[in-house]
Length: 222
Image 1 (spheres, rainbow, N blue to C red):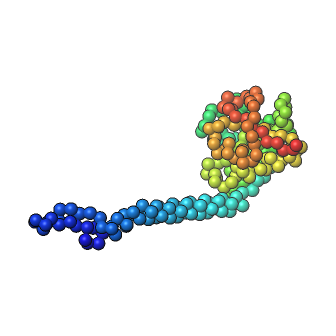
Image 2: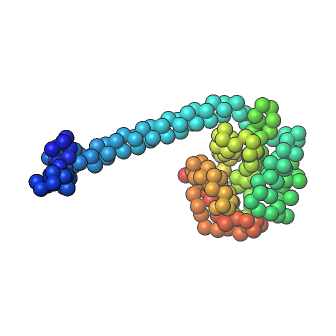
Image 3: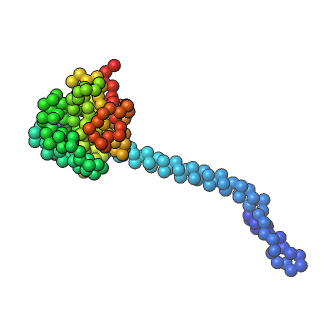
């Protein structure tokens, strides 16, 4: 017997012709799966800790960057940014429709003069995000959250959340009981943001947009 192995020698020719595990070898072999499982568990625990740490670092960075974002009311000087930011995302996923052109070509007349509001996100004094609060008639909602857009170059800074909160707060200030929006489920980050803001899916209402396949509402007052 040599360590973990047991050698059986043929008496006739003195040659090793059978090799087996010794009792010590069997004991070690039985413990290997447990040792491997423990090692594997420690490895997964380390990976998970690193993932949590990475998420925490990303979250802290996003919070720091969001402090550099300011949300201001729309002014005529932001008209081009309002139009281009919205055209960019619409053209990326869909096709510009007639209603889009009406709103984007004349936000003053189509939104503001009718009692609506537009929030603009500034980063380094540049407009990088917009979101509108459009006054609507004919349905139970007083206002619609619409035309939210964030520049791809400025994403990851919590801008969508800041714009959404600003518009929701403005709707409350204007006395809205419920807020309404239309979207498309292909826009997963946007849908997740709306849920985070508190919106819930509702039954469909008539819409001028072909791309709309989901409508949501947010109860502001009970």
